[in-house]
Length: 331
Image (cartoon, rainbow, N blue to C red):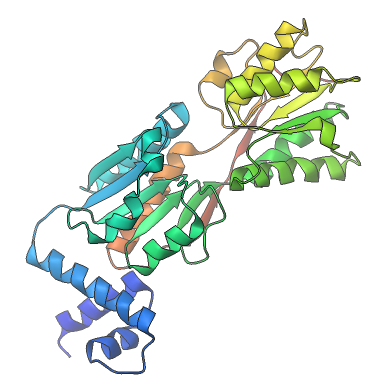
């Protein structure tokens, strides 16, 4: 077999995750190949033919972030854009909350002008991501909303260990009555962070009772409302740990409305370490997520696939770091 033919087989094998021998069997029309595998290989072959027919055509990566590009999502998207530019790859951005209601993923495999995709906190169900993967379309998920299927590349932060660290910090300051304002219970990050908080509390012999827990959409307004409920309890918590920094800002507002001093009367901690965490009074104790690194790693993983290699790892968790500021103090 000529070297270029062998290289082509290896490219298709790397892109589809099957062996070179299986690719060869499909191209030689052997019958002992599963229909799904055959379709996967043939779709990859068609993409290679299209690329060969358009030499020098730049690669285009579709980046979908169906949210407002705040300092959280904006940091991720900006780092993706910068990394793609270094690789000479064009970016096609689909952002804003209206994108949540589009059926963009289903059309991706048939779009000749899109080479691959990076999906940020995709709202779609896992089976839709599996369908896209089975179509042979290369993509990487950043900050998955639900646990990613085993064979789909994903990059996220270490939510569990970060949440455990901030709860350990409050416990170390002597707090035993800690309220938790958690995120949506159907979010992977929400589940992982709550599990981290529970693990730290359990280690200290503290039970998180239902009256000390609130699940909310992670916004400042919802944080203010949930914190008002927790602070209306008797006795009230001496500390509140929040799903993110925006929720923590709402908690600061609720504390001030009740004449509580932070941190003298109430300790408050957030998560993310976005810019607002340093602009509050007092500045927030929080957990730093490596948002820009998440974007860069996603591009690195995607480029490996586009260059005919397997990703270095399918599910990558990047370390978080506790950042102690003035919103927490000894009980």
